[in-house]
Length: 430
Ligand SMILES: NC(=O)c1ccc[n+]([C@@H]2O[C@H](COP(=O)([O-])OP(=O)(O)OC[C@H]3O[C@@H](n4cnc5c(N)ncnc54)[C@H](OP(=O)(O)O)[C@@H]3O)[C@@H](O)[C@H]2O)c1
Image (tube, rainbow, N blue to C red; front, side):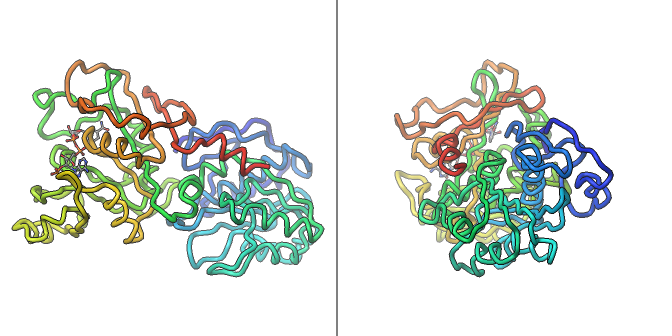
């Protein structure tokens, strides 16, 4: 995965970095001066501090460790947010914890448990405000208040406006010093799908497109090999995409892409990497009339078809090839995309990545269903080939704010969000 570079240095044999290097199996990503996170285009978090020092530099360093723990989840934590925590006393990490999803302990509880008596007088670093409400697990804020820690550094407040501030307020009322905002951008990036959808009350939709400089998705059929897939973008870009797939519950394409590419829609390029969950997403394609029986490059897979296909003669062949067929409502002769999202959400697939061709991509944009658009642009002009449909998306439906620009090898990357990342960051970081 791409890495976020921290500047500065750490001295001392017992530095947490040295400790981490002695324990490679822990799955952290901190290595010398670098930290990698699920999305590498976050920018600089801050400076490392000298061990034993208290202050913004040390806070940035220890928060980077907590963020690395959060990102190192072995499974996707959705619908819960990934969270990491460390307890620091006398400049040393004495407790670590990460939350791995519903039903598993919260990060700060695990870190405090590991710290034990050493929590007394220590500082807790946690990537998300400790909760102060009872969900599947008891609230964390009272446990933190009772643990003996005297200071809590929180990267970001709870993004849900209803609970915003509750945990921090509780801790302050119980005499703890609470500082908010260290590493906030990286923390928000990590939980963005959770934050945008108010805890997955609806699915999160990320659209990925990869085009040439002149906006083509693929060369004309006559210029394509029938055996080898066409990749417009570099391996560096595809590694980023594979990382995002691992953070997605399902990856969805249209029938056009299923037929042209029979894609695997998995995260094989990042298998075993730190900072990406180990589990693969569900591979899905949309085929209103269930006309394609060739499936995808891997099995099992899911097909979403229109109601008209309930009696299709192709059902048996698709099921025999490992396809689960799900039916959804139609609109104007094609699948109703809102119904498609609802069908996936109803099956517990909430973090969605769409990687279709121009037909499906433009339909999603026109319907105003895209939360984040990750747009790779390869440094090539094709002059001809598969381009955007002539009908433009409905004005205003696809309006975004630019969150960041970056590169992936020779390719350019633009990340746009429907909800302003900067505005949300401002809301959660103070
Ligand atoms: N560069 C890239 O990032 C990239 C990515 C993917 C594909 N491609 C290329 O793009 C080409 C395929 O383009 P494409 O646009 O045909 O593929 P697509 O967008 O993946 O598939 C389009 C098909 O999806 C189905 N669909 C079902 N419901 C839909 C809805 N509500 N709105 C839109 N489509 C719906 C339609 O088939 P039914 O009417 O039968 O349901 C439609 O023809 C290939 O050459 C492929 O290699 C490039």
